[in-house]
Image (cartoon, rainbow, N blue to C red; front, side, top):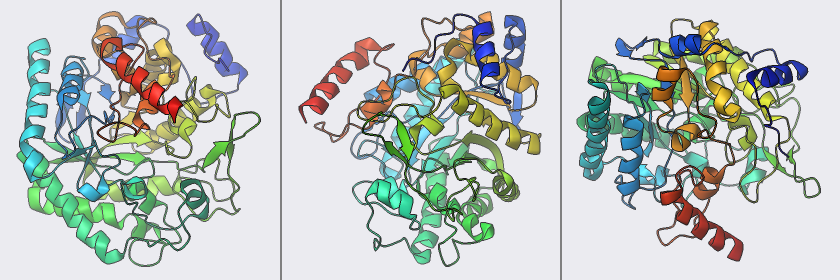
Length: 473
């Protein structure tokens, strides 16, 4: 079903009002959009030259041993020239066992030099375009994919609803407390390798259903890492503490934090719409969810967790939601699903509003802790108007762009010059990038991902090949 059919910002505003959405507004004046998005931001004592960020997005194009490859370097060269002053470098596994796909970046002793070259290229082209990198922040995201690791999943606890969605047996072993203690030191060592490669900021990734995010929702897990909020935040707090103890202020600590897990969805065979799997009430699982209605966010516990993380040294948070493996419409409201997935179970603007509700609630709870907002892509060329409004209202600090940066890498430069986007260049949320991420029938075990509609020369042939293989299977 086609939802986005708004010719003017006024049309979109009227739809927002018709749906009675309380958390979404728009700044119509291009000059005020330029002013809001051009504001410098100080995070952890470092100034970012404007309020625009590129989210960490995996290209699935590393070598099998974790080095950035040709397409990786190409992507970050484009990002470096974008004009965004916060370039959040994509998820990089801290151990081979924690890779989400065989071509994910993997930071280890043998790849430090390649990571250094990737950062150097990003800084070099940014300096060429904008004169300096003194006001550019580029965190490296460190991750362990947990339940979604390949080839062997590693789970934090048993949630029967997620287990059903992921075909996880009820007796599948859960990672032990001793293994988690060992993994804390692996994260700390990876932070050291990031510093060695030249990074001055690292992200302890806790979103999208991966291991650290799953620990946050492990209310039924026994032991030191489950049950109470203190226990469920222990791993992240310990990692932050160990990094701080060893590296001091040498590394800024940041997080991409999943603030609302929601529940798993499946496809209705008749309507093709997404429908939630059956879940118990009260719902004794998950992070940021209402126990009485897990379809709805509850920020009370998230706010307490952010207080804990802030005390542990976190100085910048990227606010995320949902899990792309079991409820992709929550994290990425879309116009069209990737092939084989479900259609939107709600108007995408409702999902956008939910993102703004969550991010706005957190930012207003911590007005002096910079946060990056998510969920703008479906708004297409009106996304900057919503972002400017949120910044003006104190509901977010940074406008985060994900898929849109693949489609329109010069997005930040154009906003600073014109206060508006070219509608012919903006991401249409057709999820071709997600489709490519899910395709494994490639000689290397994973297709690389990008934007086939707007980067046709490189990704058009890749998309054609991936579709042919998918349909033949």
